[in-house]
Structures are given as C-alpha cells and as structure tokens.
View 1 (cartoon, rainbow, N blue to C red):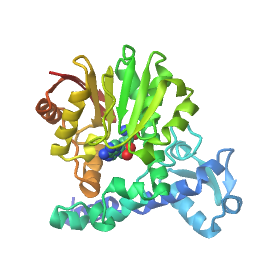
View 2 (spheres, rainbow, N blue to C red):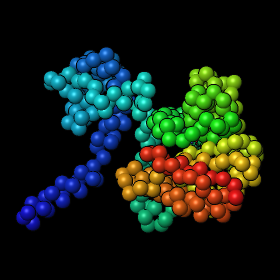
View 3 (tube, protein in one colour):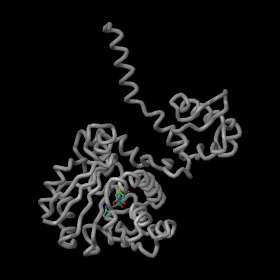
View 4 (tube, protein in one colour):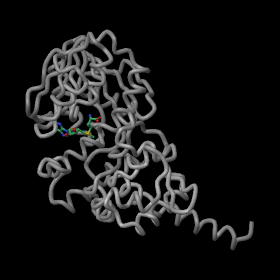
Length: 333
Ligand SMILES: C[S@@+](CC[C@H](N)C(=O)[O-])C[C@H]1O[C@@H](n2cnc3c(N)ncnc32)[C@H](O)[C@@H]1O
C-alpha cells in the first residue's frame, strides 16, 4: 500500500473515531419520538414533521443521514421507515432504548474531559460544582430521565441474569442502589417465592411503589430511602444485590460499603455484585472512561473485587459472565 493511501485511510479512520454527529442525531430523534410515529409503517417526512411538531427540512436531513447508517430506511425519496435499529427507539418496544442514552449533563461533562486529563479531577464536578447524584437530586426532570435510562439497561440485563444464575432458592432479596425498583421487581415477577426491598436515595426510590404496582408485585416489594453509607440497611436477607453502583465509587468507599454490608448480612447471606465486565471491548472501555469523567470510580476485574471483598471479610464463591455484566457471588468469611 502506498504511503499516501495509507495516510488517507488513517485520516478517514481517525475522523470516524472522533465523529459525534450520528450520536447526537440518534439522541435527538429518540427524544422527538420519531420511531413511535413510524410504528404503523413508512411515512412521508412532511406528515411526520407535522405530527411531531418538527421542522420538515431539518428532519429530512437528519433522517437521511441516519438512513445511511441503517438507523432508518428511505425506500423512496422523502419516505422513511423503521429498521431493526430504530425499532429499538420505539417507546413501546419491550427492550426499548429510547431513553437509554447518556444524559445532557454527562455530555456537558465530557466536553470538559481535558480538565480531568490535566488535573485528575472529575470533569462533572468541575462543570457543575457538585457530584453526579447531588446534581440529579436537585433536578427532578433529569432524575426521571436517569431512571428511564437505567430501566432500559436493566430490562436487557434481566434477560441474561435470570438465565445464567439460579435465583429460585432466594426468599428475601435487598437491592442496594436499586433505582426505581426495576431490577428487583423484574426478579419478583419471575420468582413468586421471593420478597424484596429496594434501597436507594430518597428521590429515586420514591418511584419504586409505582414500579412494583405496574409489575403486579406490590405485596412483595418494600422500598427504603437513604444513603448507603449513613442509613441503616435492612438486615438478615438471603441475598443482597448491588448492580452498577460500585463502579461509581473509589476503592476506599467500596471497602467501607462492603464492611457495612458484611455487618448486616447473616453468616449464610450472599452478596451478588453485578458490575460491568473488565473485558477489552468497546463497552468496558466506554464504561471506564465514563467513570473517569463523571465520578471517582472505575471498571474492576473479578480478581480486584476479590481483594476488596477480602478486606471486608468476604470471599468470592463464583463469578458468572452475564454478557453485559459480571455477577460475583460473594459470601461472608
Ligand atoms: C448507575 S445507577 C444503577 C441503578 C441500578 N442498580 C441499575 O443497575 O439499574 C447507581 C444507583 O446508585 C444510587 N446511589 C448512588 N449513591 C448512593 C448512595 N450514597 N446511597 C444510596 N443510593 C445511591 C443512585 O441513585 C443510582 O440509582
């Protein structure tokens, strides 16, 4: 290959890696609900724009750009249809990803990533003057969007987690940092023997009663609001689950929390740590960099969790590779 040609290929690849246009275009059409308006079949862009209150020419250019990437189809000029990718942007899809994407404040923090590289400080805190959870707590609309994003991910994760781990013997489960109860209620609706408590910050866990009612498990689901580090946690459950929470914490905070947990567990309780995998793939790399920009945490290997668990008086009984997550089954002792 000539040096000149190799140079152009590298330029094209670098430009592709640095590009963010389609990422924003996908978010914008997801917010507008375009996919829901195509659910009944292909539509002309003018009708679509009128229905969703969009600017026709801007919508045309955006949908056409997304069609080149397979997110929509344009079977004839100006006529747009769903594809398998945009089906997932429908709000009523069982695995809907309409609200799955990173929030606006995350994007603002990313724009200041250079600050983190220069100083080691969290870009998010630098931009907003406060940490991620405090910012959400002060902005209920953002908090609702965050809940939706976690719900979308959890629906996906539940598919694998319920297939790859045996939950049938567990009668009492406490889900720590369980957001609006989507994960716990997903378990409760699949396992009728199970009762559970979801624990999260007060503004977030307030939604759990609705989640439980919608899932038909209100009689087996309790909710407790508070801080994992300050509020007494429900004691003596068969299992404690903690999904995508430790990734946001620094090592010393993880050990502090694990010690608190060890203190409320029975000798035969189990702690199920559900965390993004540390594989050398796009998802793990993306999660780790998000943590660099947004908080104090990072992606950890099961071996590293083994060391942190040992510091808190626990050991790893099993590690299950559940595709999007690792499940680390830890026991006291
Ligand atoms: C990335 S989300 C994961 C939510 C849920 N476990 C899931 O997997 O979808 C982290 C959760 O931890 C909660 N959280 C963060 N710090 C907390 C604290 N100090 N006390 C209680 N909950 C906390 C947040 O409110 C949020 O719901």
